[in-house]
Length: 119
Image (tube, rainbow, N blue to C red; front, top):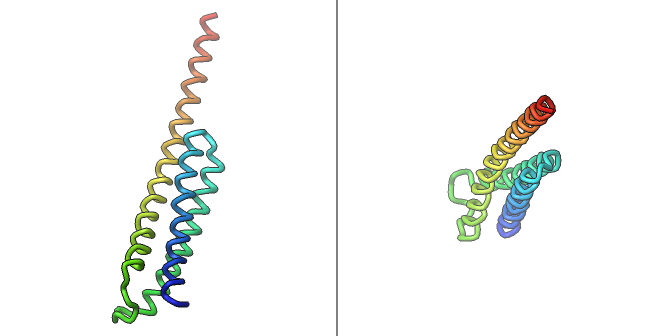
């Protein structure tokens, strides 16, 4: 696998993962939690593919500078690292949305119960 192909594989998989994370956040905001969870799971799979490609590159280099470092290679690494952070934050934010939804449901049930009791 040539370097350009490796770089593109990292960028494409990281980009797909990032898109899936932001879709998951939008879905969580709308209360579509199952779809959001699925997109987080799919984003993890994309990150794993990108990370595997990165690992192969590191193994090839063996810490000896065998793989030339280009600006596009740095961009690919940066893209992967920021996407990993996005994925971790999206996972946490999904949990926050789930908790808020649960609390809102509890609140609504209590209000309904109190309104029924007043009648």
